[in-house]
Structures are given as C-alpha cells and as structure tokens.
Length: 114
Image (cartoon, rainbow, N blue to C red):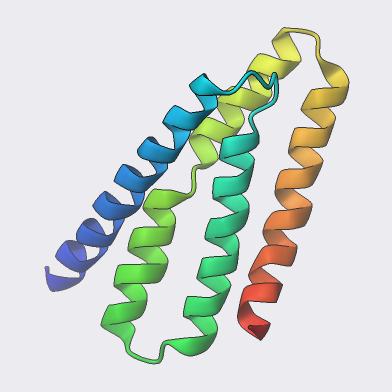
C-alpha cells in the first residue's frame, strides 16, 4: 500500500510538470511535437541519473517510477506520431519516431554516466 502512495505522489508531480511544459507547444509555431520530444528525452536522462545514484528503494520508486513515469509520455508520443502519419507528413513522422527512441536510449545511458 505504501508503494502505491509513493509512486502516485511522484507521478502526480511529474504529470503536472509535463502538462505545464506541454502548454508551451501551443504558444510556439513549430509544426513538430518538439516539447513532447524534449520531455521524453529529459525524462530518460533523469531516469538514468536516478537509477545510477539512488540506492533507497522508496526514493527510487518516488522519482524513477513515479515522477519519471508521470513526466514522460508514451501515450502522447503515439497520438502525435499518428497525427503526423494521418496528415501525410511521413518524414516528420519518421524523424519524430527515430529521434524519440534514439535520444531516449542515449539519454538514459548519459544519465547513468553523469
């Protein structure tokens, strides 16, 4: 039961921060989901740092599973990817997919080594 609360608190903060940052996307005139891309890369770096540095299981649940899980977004990524596909923006779709996965993995590795 306690793990549920720990993860939930971290996820709530992460989701709130993601929502606030996502509002920036509507204010900039870029026809590419750059904010979600940056959120997911930043979250991967943070998860790498937390995984490498935190030995306490409860704190890792709070920051890794909770915060990073709530902050990063696989659902929004898939929605935006699908929108690009259905708008027949094949190259943007390809680059969004490729950059998200490559920089997500690299970000995690960089985070572990920081």
